[in-house]
Length: 330
Image 1 (cartoon, rainbow, N blue to C red):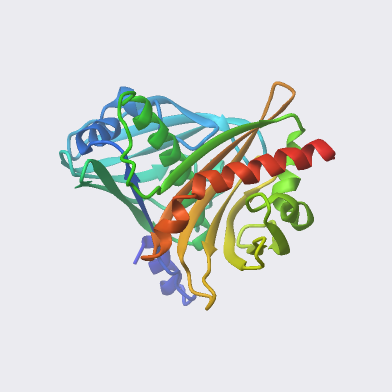
Image 2 (tube, rainbow, N blue to C red):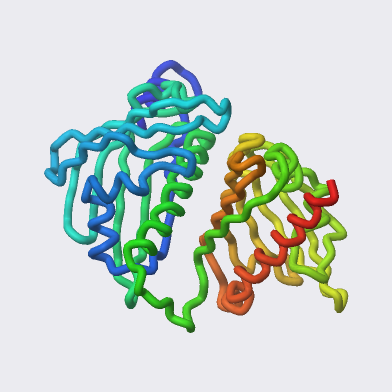
């Protein structure tokens, strides 16, 4: 039990529940490169931090017991203010190229909307496992003192790992993906000649979302989207032959009109999950319009999921084309 949880219990109050986040990502890169990108400061600075943030200072020794520090600079999604966020901790375990453990804390938790009752120093564990010519990264952090603090860090780390995937791809310009691979990551950028507020509304207003979500020739007769952290998502996509494809999900973090994170789970005819994705939508004002960055990664899947996932990129590309046409009509 964490210190804050024990204090709560000693005061005769209901103790906190400890939360832990776990993220598993599969990177199309050898383990040695993934390890180097985590432990070489010059490489880590090129990807560390969620979208909209860059690491401007980093001191992270590879010696157990040594302190580490990091400073990130960027725009806080809740306010749009430019800030520097400082983190620190202690390196606890280093086992190349498979295990990195360190403690993690914010210099000023309130800078990221946390109080001492939400967050105290916890532990990050990074495990790297070879899987063919790829690397499976299992990332855990905890304990957290609230579900909201856990969700916030889940969103931030996933966004950083989206940048990590792009960085690893750029480090291997001659690498050719295996044609038989089942896609588990998708990163798309699209520029729209429309104001950011309108693009955000098109993503988060059910009436507008229903007009473009799903591939071409599909319709969305039912669309529910609650624009808030913890909000419910439910859609039914209807194919030209009348087949209905339902999808449920949850809004994890919601920062209008900058970004939001959500889960999405396509369901079979009996209401069972086929696979689940974590999705991040990041909107940036640029050149008089809006640049969208969409990051998708698969968190879990069933045996039948590959037949759907192989069409993920084309499906999203068609949907975003419908979104572009919708924005032109506004």
